[in-house]
Image (cartoon, rainbow, N blue to C red):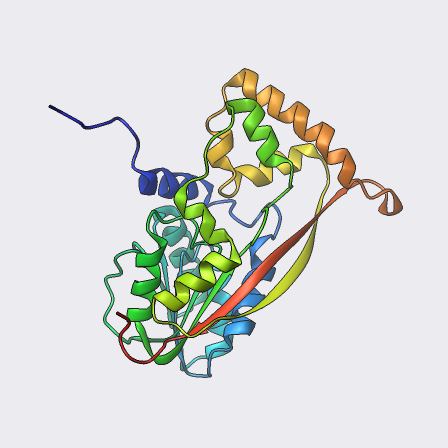
Length: 280
């Protein structure tokens, strides 16, 4: 009996959404860049080092890593979304950057040699792949012994805290995907140790972001993974989405600064080292 289903490939869904967002990714509001700088600072790459940035996007971690390693170092960016890779490589060409490259790649199966990198960074990516433990094993494989892995997670809500409630009203409650638990520090820390890394050290970072109005919030949602929600909306649902955003956004109004709304976002920078011998 044919047991095939019509369920879409989750990797194809994610890569398609982020490719569609690539042109405006982190351009509407510079959301990922400050966290990328914080993650690279936590990783502290050596001058002249070799860095791999997984799920590189438009370079939130890649560009700070490039600054850190200097002209004699190198940074390779890997992303599942071809649109992100095209945007980055075009920027490298336009800026005359010769020691950075972006490639389409799957973090669960990296087409890269063992022990090729001194540092691996991954900004807000570990909760997206279907098999995060396999990703961690791959990231450890491509690190040199005693190399450094730096991952950022939110360890809590990302974006406006009421966005999940809006999604539930529009589409009904949905069970969390198994990989979403890797947005929790306790789960990620244990998984890192199980993959052969040292017990991780972590630092919390809080950044604040300003939005002019509800329209900019919607534009920002379309510019990143939030479009996975908006792309599901028909006209009626989109109208309801806009109504609910307008209502909830009032709690973020900053009357002391005149017009505008503020999002305070917490994130966790987690750093661990390659544990030496191969993990069991």
